[in-house]
Length: 59
Image (tube, rainbow, N blue to C red):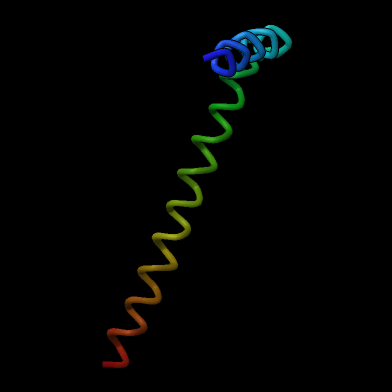
């Protein structure tokens, strides 16, 4: 039980050291992630479609 208490108290101490991003910074990062995810999804979907079309043309 002492190990659990020590772990939790150390966790609280470490969490106080964390520098959390500001809301505008977090929002900006979120936009970049969402846009890049959509772009990669479209690209991978296009490649998948082209490869599938190629396989269907062979058979």
